[in-house]
Length: 258
Image (cartoon, rainbow, N blue to C red):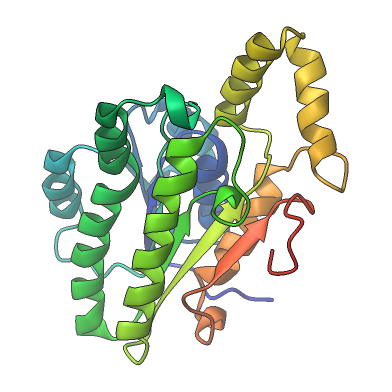
């Protein structure tokens, strides 16, 4: 299938690691132009050396309000086809271990900047009558994850925002969808494995095996497989799909609406 992404311009957040990196590379391989946003873009530059002519990087922290103006200045007057709204999550904590300051920070790191960037992008896309936004959140929006109360709660706020906006602009030619990754083999997951191993008093290798077994397919997810669904949602083929949350989890979610 021709995904019709060639020569289109996409923003990709968190583009130097994990799912963001895999999606950025997949877009480049389809002939798209990518502006990759990361605090440390060097890994993306190395991984995408064969596509350097279609890659730009922005060294920025998406969670900082000042970054928004900088990113939009880089885009300039070019037409943005779509964006992958993605960045790291809040620290692992249980509900009773949190302080109110942790919740304030989680709002800043998970919710606020996504609303800001989305509003800016959608207003630009409305002028062209086309756009594709994909938010990389977590499978926790359908099934809470142990010791991740900040992520469990704040990512649900993003789902509520995206669902509402998708309905408000449904006739505009702009779609917004959410991907809920499960246990993928990424640096972020490795940090959770390390944390849980320490809490449980087992080795990291044993904890990694336990994590893999939580998925019904019996293994951790491959970020490159994740990226294939992201590409379809970013393509013209997804014109009739909006406001949805897709679990990409190897069968982790047990509910029938997973």
